[in-house]
Image (spheres, rainbow, N blue to C red):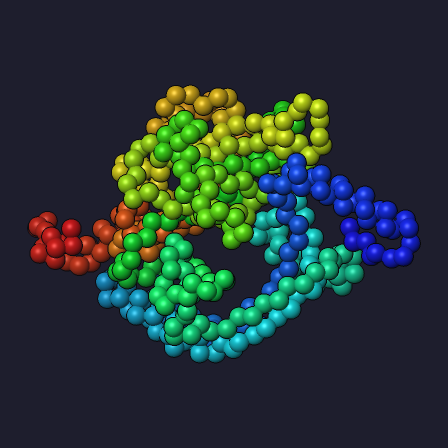
Length: 408
């Protein structure tokens, strides 16, 4: 709702009443968020798209299109890595131009249209239909963006782990932040820094088949080193305006939706030493918007969890986790949620692992984990190591070569 303040007494009274209501809601529900608005930005404003497509096609022709499960030769992988570096230094950025953009109109975020597929469909329909353009109401606002090439030396820069990079000026209040890249294809490069990050992406939840009044659903995410509530570790990166590390975070609440979509990114600093007790704990709540005498804001709906290690390797891949509607049993974290839960609703999860000696990309379907790691090997990383050893050369009698012994 947008109200323009005028000299009329009714308008002023209405604005004052809304301010008081907003203060009351913020005091009671301030730590919860709702999707509000969004705006599309065309990448064609920043890149020469035709040149970019031609350079990507050149890169693919160097590597060749391999089928699923097919092994690349070591020389092909090296050429891919070299080509990726050359594109970064001399290719894609060569046609990049510094661009400033001001956005002053936003689309209201619909609660049942939060997925990428829904947004893409809306944009296609909006571009094609003039009647839809007239019918859709926009929200006024102001967002200024400027995108430019990074200089050779960036002063006051923080790594994805929020570590300062020299030269770092203590006087600067707003440092630059590096974003960890997840390449589309494997790029075989050595790990030159210690990295142990986990990225969690809850994406979808389904409570439609349950006899429950849950409609305003949020997920509390914690990284646990044990099963006691006090074992929640302060390793979750906070927002820029809050503490550096948190013990828990909440997803946004979609109002009156039993099967919400999410687009959160939860970034976690993994401990250097992981054990079988470490796991992700997801707690599901219904949030009461209306204040009731003696009633709690949060109503517990259920739990789900994901052990971090499986056979001494980081869990990676895509997950569809059941949600336990009853109290968690003892030693629940030692088993998968599918085995322990008696039944509940489905929560979808996926993960990514960046483990030595290469960076691995995993699909992210419905709820997600990615991991940037130079300390542990995930399942997919193990496959890549075996592929590397197979192409590096072992004789046909099954003996290990000197190169393999050195690598191991």
